[in-house]
Length: 293
Image (cartoon, rainbow, N blue to C red; front, side):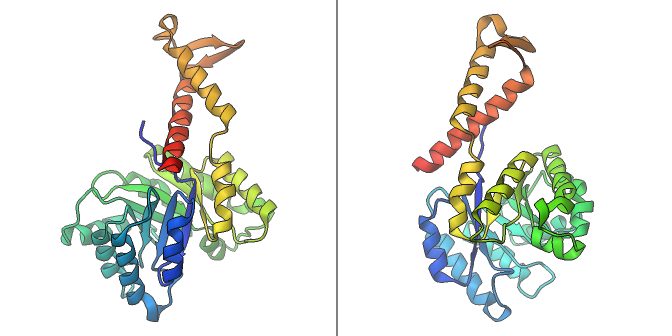
């Protein structure tokens, strides 16, 4: 089982050279170098050149590098797409994906530019139509230019639906779960939206815990101070890893081979628990490798 940790995914403005350099020292699993919302129209082209140079220059270690481009309908979208692929970004994040056709339009541009079909894509899920079409978007994910992650744009969803982000995001939970179900059905990871209160440690912790309980793979962040709490919440605890290894070892015993259910420490454990345990160990090992890189 090959897993890449995406516990903490930090947005960095592509127009800010100091931020791009500082990102090389931050313990985030992934960085989104942003050419869209964080960049003013008059700075778009300069930011694109700066981000491409930063990615080509390297120095980001094991961090996954993602470039968020402008939409194809904008004056910068097509050039952003081609530049992100040429730069060698680990993934390209597409804004405001609302239907499977949006993916196909992006794929046509990449194919026309001669970009390798293995180039991964991520999709922002940030509009009512995106939520309603989540299953169709996810179903269109496999294949060339594979869609590997949904990124929840909770601020935009709140704006478009008039739902509040306060009160535990109660109005948004069904939409978040819809995207998680669609993602799981087609092997797509799902990253929670940002938490806006930079100084609100308790609020951040509560939303991180909620995201993990919902089944999120990690969370997008807007400030470096949010990285450590995020990594902690989305990492399996030592107890969870120990229990997982014990389950795997028990099913590997000669007397348990081929069994669908066994007794372990006074409780019944099914084969599906062994599969869950394998993922827990895989993510723990991947985190250890990432942190030791």
